[in-house]
Amino acid sequence: MEQIPYPLRTERLVLRRFEPTDLDAYYAYQSLPETARYLLGDARSLAECMERVGKFSQQKFSQEGDWASFAVELAEQPGLLGEIALKWGTGGDAEHGYVGEIGWTLTPQAQGKGYATEAARAVLELAFGQLGFHRLHARLDAANDGSRKICERLGMRAEGLFQQNWFLKGEWTSEAVYAILRSEWRAQQ
Ligand SMILES: CC(C)(COP(=O)(O)OP(=O)(O)OC[C@H]1O[C@@H](n2cnc3c(N)ncnc32)[C@H](O)[C@@H]1OP(=O)(O)O)[C@@H](O)C(=O)NCCC(=O)NCCS
Image (cartoon, rainbow, N blue to C red; front, side):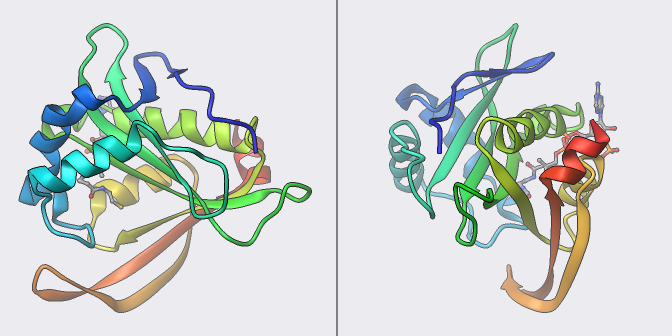
């Protein structure tokens, strides 16, 4: 697969590679219980954030199982607002296309402005274009309305609901899976 051509640009945003200097802003939103509310893990410690930002800033997207983390910031006002994550999953190949997963997180102050959807669109366009993906899916807590609405705005299909598949934050929750094929993405552009 081709290397990720950082940075990507949209109307309002720049999606770039993480840098070690993103640590404070990353920790500020990743340490919030509201950020972790619908995620598998708990709010992250400073040590976890240091490890993750360090890893993100040196990521290679060279084999199945690898992740690409896009740091999202405003074009006109640099500063980390959140991230889009793209995973190269198992099941595709260079000839027929790759399969993978996409996810998103924004700092609370940046929510409600369409930034996550705008940034995810740029990553889908890259994935289905230059990177040669065939299919992308998203996995979410079915109660995560914000995330579900992003999937719907992107034209992703609700493919499954796994009842009480995750024990999260003290209760059984259901997992929803949304997905989109390259042909479907192309058809709606
Ligand atoms: C999931 C998450 C990224 C959704 O954030 P979000 O801000 O709702 O999503 P977007 O950035 O796409 O913004 C969409 C909202 O902005 C509104 N909006 C306001 N101005 C807008 C504009 N100029 N253009 C587009 N949308 C705009 C939209 O109407 C929409 O609001 P609505 O959902 O009330 O209809 C966020 O809640 C989050 O980070 N949660 C914590 C981590 C998490 O759960 N991640 C998902 C794991 S699966």
